[in-house]
Amino acid sequence: MKESAGILLYRHSRRSVEVLIAHPGGPFFANRSVGAWTIPKGLIERGESAEVAARREFVEETGFAPPDTLFELGSVRLRSGKVIYAFAGEGEVDPGALDSNRFDLEWPRKSGRVRSYPELDQVRYAQPNEARELLNPAQSLLVDRLLAYLGSG
Image (cartoon, rainbow, N blue to C red; front, side):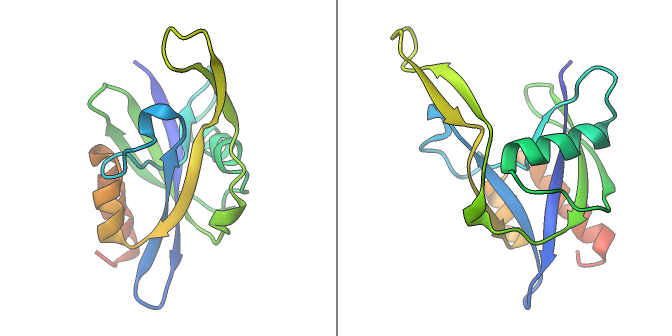
C-alpha cells in the first residue's frame, strides 16, 4: 500500500479560515476542477517519518517553506487505497510564486512524445466550503478536522 504525507496550510482572513489547495499538473487533470484538487503531498520514502515527508514534499511541490509548527490531522484513505497522513500549519504564501517540481510523461499515450509537466500547476487559498467541493472527496475531511482543531467548525 502506498502512503503519502502532506500539509494543509491555513491562514486567518477577515471572514474565516482559508486553506491552501493545489491543482495537479499534467494532462489528466488539465480540464478537471471539482474533486480534483489536493493538498501538497507526496510519497513517504523508506525510513522517513510522515512529518518529514510532508515537509519535504511541501517544498518540492510548491517551492514554499513549510510552517515551523505543524499539528496532525490524522490520515485519510483515497478510493485507490492510498493512505495520506496530513498535517496542518498556519502560514502565508504568495500563490503566484508557485515553483513546483516537474515530471516527464509520454503524452498523448503511445505517441512517443515525452513532455515535462509541473507536479502542481496552481495553488490558491479557498474558504472551507469551496475547498471541500474542490478537494478530492477523501481529502475534504481534512478541512473539517482542521476547523474542529481550531474551534471554527
